[in-house]
Length: 220
Image 1 (spheres, rainbow, N blue to C red):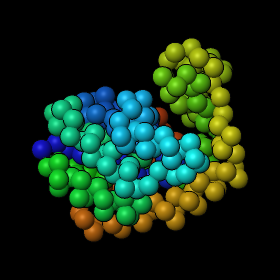
Image 2 (cartoon, helix red, strand yellow; image 1 turned 90 degrees about the vertical axis):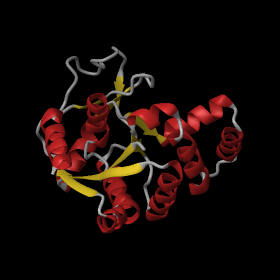
Image 3 (tube, rainbow, N blue to C red; image 1 turned 45 degrees about the vertical axis):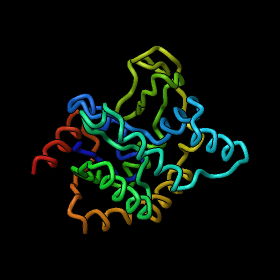
Image 4 (cartoon, rainbow, N blue to C red; image 1 turned 180 degrees about the horizontal axis):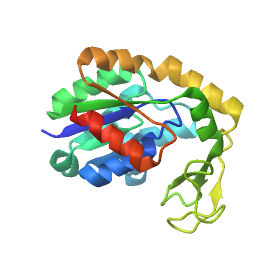
């Protein structure tokens, strides 16, 4: 039985940054639903070909297909041995219900759902100040206010150029926060009722301080 973790919280709360630190420290496998979709398509599996067809037609991949891919991934030996941090799933209560069934069938345990809370204005500042590494294999994220790169416009990790996402404007940030409130925030009540919810706070401290706060919350 492996321990499964989920981090939830509004966009800009730092889930990606502390999630990376969490996996490095605990050796839990980072499982991104986006990565699973790409891997399935690249491998030419039945599910992957189905997804490729849906995307080519401009459709949305259904919860059922995503859940099936997640279930297949959770059966792999690396996760059985080390557990994992799920990234991008669940985003809604129906997905959380599906995950509950997946964990029962794969004999894994939901160790904790960590809610990372943060001040709205800080989130907007973070979202509009974010810069992404253009090298997809690297995927580093910077913030020109809270965590700037050593050299302006250049990734510290791989040397590739940094760019600002088109949805990192204030208007787009407000819209993303609104979508989170409507679609994902209901997970808070769901997991509180399940007894899995752990709360922590993200502030303008360094990522190391926010990560230490998260790890302390998990110990309580």
